[in-house]
Each structure stands twice: as structure tokens, then as C-alpha cells.
Length: 302
Length: 302
Image (cartoon, rainbow over all chains, first blue to last red; front, side, top):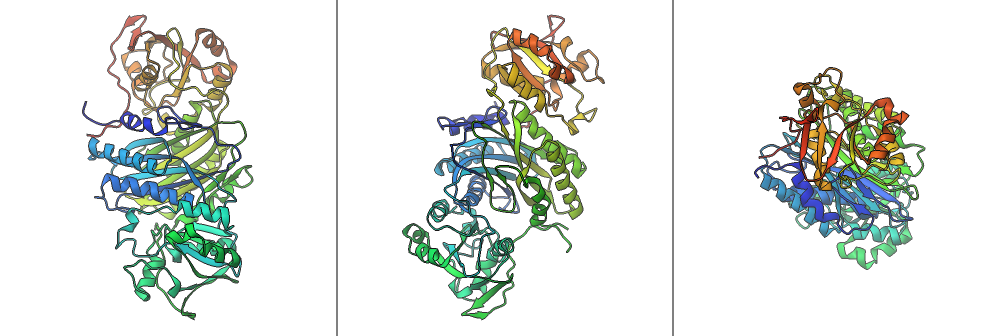
């Protein structure tokens, strides 16, 4: 039989949820979930749009991997362990059955790699690729929000920042799940989030929620190896976005301990500044004020 | 400030989750959910695409209402009570801030009407309207699937079927939440689902899952008042789709009781046929075999 229907997708995913305790997956109107006792659920949703988040000519596999990884990054941001994912596919009619199958299998394989079952989905026609993914995670301790930063706290980031587009690293983000869980279990973050729109856009979200300011020492930013410690390097690191590293606010003693933690050091953890009184975000170069143009990334409608 | 950003959306939704026990909503990377003890969660996801599920020129309010209602219909199909919804918006750049605000407020108002909080979302740019909604519900008893139909069981539907496009009823489906819950709590459905793609497409899903056949008496179909008991009326009733009525399989004694139930009779409940041995779906006109062309609705890719 030629052609590809939504039910073909169900068959691909039948294998994904079999044998998972407390989870009954696709093929019915709803997935059935029995949450483990005493755990809170963390839920997030994300999108990948062709021509916006990925080149319209990106491969089905690239779509699948970016979609899942950027969604799971939101769970990392609260230190949660992935429990379930579901997704939607809006695909142009010129996508072939073979492309859709490749997309579905890549998504399933990626989910398997993160040990999370795909419990449902919906497939529709459209003129443009629009994929969405909803993930649920299980908490690993108190869930850090964005409102707990206090003056004197240390601002840290994991990994490296910047050059996500020029190096292509935005295609295959690494959700910092292990590190997020470690931070929540051991270092009591006052606030935490993942850097998807760039430090210049994301840090102010914590500052507003916490009613505080911050000073960031640019020379302390862990830059991607393709960048240099100069204006262009810093602009990329704070403004380009799609880093998917963790931005963490810790009190000074927890910060010191975290920077000695072996798990965190494996991917890198760097103190880049301090929380201050007030509401301003100030960039510093060797302690002196520095103007940056970088604004971070944002959708805007007229 | 002109323009409209994703953060403007968060503000609109702040009011939606305040004061709900066990639910912390948008503004962070994840919503926090504490499931009520002893209840299973039912999760479903649905899409509304401009030009596919709705006219591209549909009003923002029409988009919002259809999106939420067709998603909740999946919860009705398993007799669940809505607990949370989240959504994604992919919107063309020519949508104005005012239109987006109208869409968001209409979605929120509709969710309020169904007493379900909007716990999160994501907004992106696109060339076409693609909206998705993920809903979670709480079970109200054993969750009916599609695999439990047995020869001799009665096939029933709620409400009226057909003419959903000509009458415009597809714009404002009525999720049969009260009826779904009632059926699950009192009448032990062997199988249940909602009719979104039409009886001709949806009933075979139950038949395949249950490895049974069925006979449907066309003259027993509860037709929309704009239709007549003739070939054209039956084709519309079984093939047009978007009815969002419940399709229920009950054993004969439960069926008799259900048809006398006051809650169910309020919207109408009608026995339309029987489950048989084998795997065939046969249409009957006054007991004699009848050929129909209606196939139900399906997305298809090359």
C-alpha cells in the first residue's frame, strides 16, 4: 500500500511504551499514566518550526533530534528526570512516506537514548514543518524557579557559551539532565533555567522574577573554542542563544562546593558574576562597565 | 510599547492557575503538578491547522474554541475529568498583537468555562496557523480502551451525527465530558472513543483493536436535523467527521440501562447496531445490506 497515514505512525511507536510501568501509550484516545508516589510532575512544551528554528531543508533526523533535545533541556533546567514525551507533527504534503518514517524513527531512537517513552502524538498536514513536543519529568528535590535569587548570590553557567549557529551546535543541544539533577540534589539552587535565548535575554528573566540586579564579568564567560575573549566573542556568547547550558544561581558557599563537584566539572561549571541589589544587569570587562549590543533572541509580532 | 512577545502571553495566563491546588503554571521552564492520590492521568494532544481544520480566515476566537474543545473531547472519550491543558501557537507574522491577545484570552476563557487551568505554552512564528493543545485528565473509574468489544455487544452513539461542516457545528464541538464520565462510572463500556473522523473511519478502529466485526442499521442513526433518512444523509452521518459524539460499546443489559439514563438521554443516546464475529463492518438499511461510499476523514501523504 502506498501513502502514509496517521495510523502508520502509531505502529512505529507501539514499541516505545511497551513494558514501562505505569504507562500505556498510543493507539487510544489518551495515554494512561500512573505517576510514581511522592514525586511531583514537571511539564514543558516546545516547538521546532521549519525556517525559524531549523533550515527548511534540514533532514528529518535533524528535526527530530533538535525537537526532543531542546524540550528535555527545559526539564534539565528544573533538575527533573524525563518521564514521558508526546509530540505533534504538522508536515507539508510533499513530505514522502519515507521522510515521515525517518522522522518518526529518529524521534523514537532519540527518546530511547534518553530513556523516555513516546506516549502519544498527532499528525496533520500543513504548508510548513511545525513540530511540538510535550515532556513530563519527575522531580529530584525542591524545584528551583526563577524568583529565589538574592543579592550576593553567585551566577554560574555550565559548559561553553556562544557560536551555536556558526558551529552548528544548536542542531544537537545537550540537555544538561545529569547536571541539573546533581545541582538540585546537592547544591540548593536559588534559581535555575536553561539558556535558550542567550544570557542577555534569559538572565533578565531571573532578575525580574527575583527583583534583583546582576553584574557579569565578561572575561569570565566560558566561550566556545571558536570564539575569542573580545567584544565579538562576548556578543556571541550572551546574544546568540541556543546554548542550552544551565544558568544557575547559588549562594557563595554552595557555589564553591559546586565548582569542585566532579560531575559538574566534567562538562564545566563557571562563576560568571554576582546577583546585586536593584534591577540592572551590568556587563563588566575586568571590573569596568562595558556596553554590549547583544539583546538575545525573541519572536516578535507587529 | 508596540509589538507582542512571548512574555506578554505569560502575563495573560498568570491568572489561570492561581489558587489551583497542586498546580504551578507558566512563567518558569516547567509547570509543577502534584497529581491527586490514587487517580490515573489521561493525556492527549491535538492540533488545529489553518486551512486544514479551520478556514484560514477563521477568527482567533474560533481557533481557540475549536482547539480546546476537540482536545477535551479525547478526555471525554475515556470518561476523564479535565485537569490541565497546555498549548503551542505557531502564528504568521502578519497576525497583530491584538489578534494574538484575542486568541489567548479566548483560549483562557474557554478553559475557564471547562474549569481547567492553562499551565503552559510556547509561541513561535510560522507561515501558517498551527495550534496544538495537550490536555491531562483524571480518571473516573476503569479507563475504556478500544480492544474490549465482544460479539453481541450493542453499539451506541450520543447526540446527533452528520452535517458538521454544512451546519458549522464542527466549529464549536461539545466535548461529552459529563456523558463520558457517566458511562464510565455506571455502565462499564467495553470500548469507547469520540467520533472525530466519522463513524466509517472511527468504528473500524475499535473493530480492529477488538478483532470483531459490526452491523450498523443506517435507519437507526440519529441524524442532524438538516439531514434526511436517505443515502445522502447516511453518507454525511458516517463519513463527514467532526461529530465529537461518543461511540460506545456496551453489553446488552448495560445498553438497556444506559438508554434509560436521564443524564445520557438529555443529549441523546442511540443504539445503532451490534458487534459481530469476524472483522467486517456491514451497513444495513432495514436489515438489508447497503453499500456506502463514505470513507471518513484522513490525512494522507504521498
